[in-house]
Image (cartoon, rainbow, N blue to C red):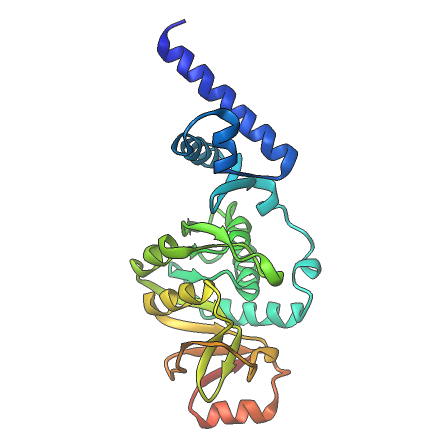
Length: 267
């Protein structure tokens, strides 16, 4: 057997073994695979990159997980324990502001997921959709009326009931290079005194990048997101933003928002 054929057989066998490790354990680390197969981490990263391109696994920071671990779709009630119907109404209202042929950015928020789901069900609008949300991307992956672009980066953000997302410097850099018609973000809180706020997670930086890259920004926030506590400020409130919430919002908060000349819409 020629040297090239031997090398190819070794690579194929190693990649098959990597998939077996993921099937057995649910996830793998590059450093552990490097020791297991007595090869460099660069070799392992190349293996994982190619297996990811084939849709056989999903890269994470320093390793990989089984593709179905990210793409399998539990019930909405299991993923989103609170305000599911309100978020669906907000998503439907947001969809009404999207025009045929527009390029839009959707973040990894739960309401963003419902917007992606609504878009998938409405082929009458052909759109360009960019997202860093793993489940939103999966929801749109078979929609022929959508030109889908998924932001790269490491996969994280699943803690605390949040959805998996691509994050980090690569994701932020990719978003900052974009210029889209409309951006849609979910928030930790809308504080009428200080602005859109965050619990200081890596997702905060992604939201800032989406705000900068969008000609028009829509903030999708159910009534529970107003006037909560916060650690960090994503950005000040702007009269140029469109806030979409649900009809259960406190009337006093709604009045204050309107007095501040914020463009706030209820669904």
